[in-house]
Amino acid sequence: MAGITYDEAAHLLRRMGFGGSPQEIEALVARGREGAVDFLINYAQVDNRAMDDLIARSFDFSDPNDFTKFNRFELERWWFTRMVHTRRPFEEKMTLFWHNHFATAASKVFDIFMYVQNRKLRDHSLDRFDTLLKVVSEDSAMLIWLDGIQNVKGSPNENFARELQELFTMGIIDVVTGEANYTEDDVKEIARAFTGGKVRFARGSTDPYAFEFFVNPEQHDFTAKTVYGVTANYSADDIITVVSARRSTARYLVKKLFDFFVYPITSSSSDKQTVEKFANVYVSSNHSIKELVRAIFVSDEFYSDRARFALVKQPVEFIVGAIRMLGAVYNPGTYEPRNQSNVLAALSIFLGQELFNPPDVAGWNLNLGWINTATLLNRFTYADLLVISRTRDLSAPGLWLSHEQLRRHTKANPKKTVKKFLSVLGPLKVDAKMVRALSDYLRTDDAGNIGTFTPDDLTVDKKVRGLVHLIMCLSEFQLN
Image (cartoon, rainbow, N blue to C red; front, top):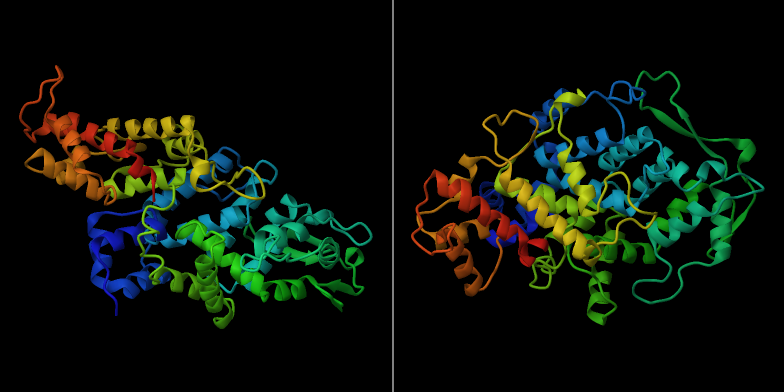
């Protein structure tokens, strides 16, 4: 079994989750490459009751009509609480991936349906792709977002049929061959296969979030359709089976997963070979998402120099990652508005990413799309907010970086302290000049004089907090 270095384990935890403490990284090192990946993927075996108990204390979603306790902003607070406190980081990271892939938004969809969809994406994130695609196609949020409930016999709405092919499965052109994957006639015919889809509250259920999909036979087109040159009496399920089995879908999903988790795929011949290699895994595993992502995360491609720090951190990754790496405290408070904190969701919006509300059906523009002069300054503002967040009561709602946590990583001399925090927040690779500049900062007093470094409480509270801020403002920390 292949081993895994500390840097590789940190890379794995950043990509499969949001980063973690040195102890969490060392635990992955001890498992080896495949063992570490299997531990993160097989998250159902990990005890997550501490997070579940926190969620139960902090949120009251028992009545979706109680808008003081159930609304978009509460949903955002709920998901950030999950991402910060979960012991199953890959569960939340895959949910985030699918949320961006099957992008729907609260700008058009009722909050209750966004919540239900999020739960479905989490529950089915590692299923066969066919299964997940069927769940999404019958989901209330998707039916509303792409006007599926208006898709009826005699007047088919083509929105879902188009995005099904363009964004959710195969793309307009094949990732490898460059050939067109479908025609306008395919869009029209597939739209007819999805006619009549509706949603209603589940009969006999006591769960206020239980909705069921059904097909109104009077609004469904039962006549034959011609799709990809083959004529048959296709149902929606038939189309899902056909589309999921196409080679172009395997290739497209590999590209989307690489773009999100590994590095941006180009049109080069070597990248096309990489796509084919992992498309084979999709096909041979009967479209298993779990087997596909496992193959990616144990691969040499994932641990290559090209993959290291090749992606720009999403705002969510930037915010949650710093908290988990530094061991900061986020207490969401309770469901009572006067006793809660939604600071992380507010900061994420400030940085350009509002959960449950991507900008359009194509989702967020990843990587360089996150960085401009305004959002970069906003990232620096978050770094500042994090390091100045002091409290004597860590049980109070809010975001706190404790003195004790900073002291734990502070060393006897400035250079070792700098290197320790560069390791905790990455590990980040910077040149000797930057290490020297950061070390000099730790030794510089308010008058600008460089003196000695004394790791006492005053220095930790003032200079070490400043050091964390400076490291989070480095270009290296913006990368994942």
